[in-house]
Length: 456
Image 1 (spheres, one colour):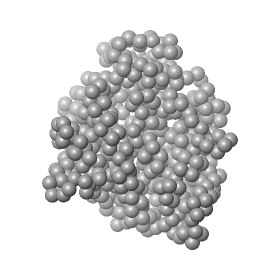
Image 2 (tube, helix red, strand yellow):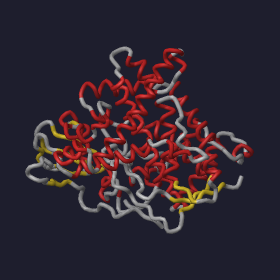
Image 3 (cartoon, helix red, strand yellow):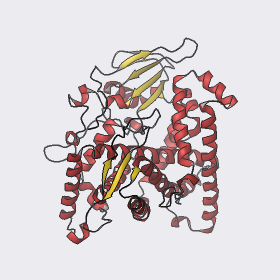
Image 4 (spheres, helix red, strand yellow):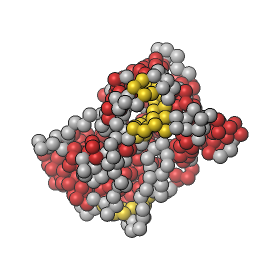
């Protein structure tokens, strides 16, 4: 049975790394919860993204992930207001259901019994879905006729995220030189950014034309809402591009990564799959579902029933613990400081925080820290155990905690319950799953599975 890699059983990592004397690359690496609370919560004002971060992630522009201060506050307040709009939430649930029934199920039906790369399916499905929510249209990246090659945008994101790792490990002057002359990995970043910019700016142009013809209230996508909110201040095409770029990147990659790792873990742990299916059966029975309904192919759990899927919620948490979609975070010290672990931080020093390592530390999770064990998240009363966010940082911690946490759990529960109820997924014999070097934790050689329709 496939197992995660070795645990971090040593005391929480907190080490000083010295880069070349001429490169200003010294940094402190940590996965200690005390340091996490200090850096991201208690003293977060002292630790900003910094100029190096903005340079490395320049393709994000002035989006919320790349800014601090007033710009960050403004964008966060605006996104918080939009994401908490009940009408928008209902719209997202409806589009997700329609997309599953209209595209995901037919695609899996067409490939039943054949070898399928479920990571690619997850990526294409989430790209289409996030475009529906953010831009208001479906690019049709996932389709039964396999038209995905005509939509290069997901590939562009992938190339950027893999190439940007290089910027983390070489002196800034080296990759800036390559960028200037368009060589090496910088050529990929430049080309892929242009591809995505063309896609997003075209969507903005079309949306503006639509808004001139229709009542604003008729459109519930996030781009429309951002434009409406921006009318109260200044909202240039560039600022819209930066926010849209960030929303698409965050929405599609984090969810497709988590979905892929979860499907692999469940497929290699049949006892977990059995408990998830039993829970779906139990929850829907308590909701008064008829047997004829539950036996119907295409069965989808309702939004109101999602809260009852405690074991599935725990399975998602356990997946995020072992395979966080964003495996590390970094900050830059605005002033000299001393960490709770005793390390002295110089002004301008970078802090690299390993979320991946934190999820595999014996001192936090116990001797079974490397076991995939959803039960660790469930109390004796059958409720989800609250783990402080400074120990479980899949959604970060402190003031910059991810705004989409609740929505992410809702989407994943909806998608996973539907896939597992309708299909049996088996690993292709001999296929090895391993992570790829990237700022998003994806699978290097995909997730090769065989998909079978369940008996109804």
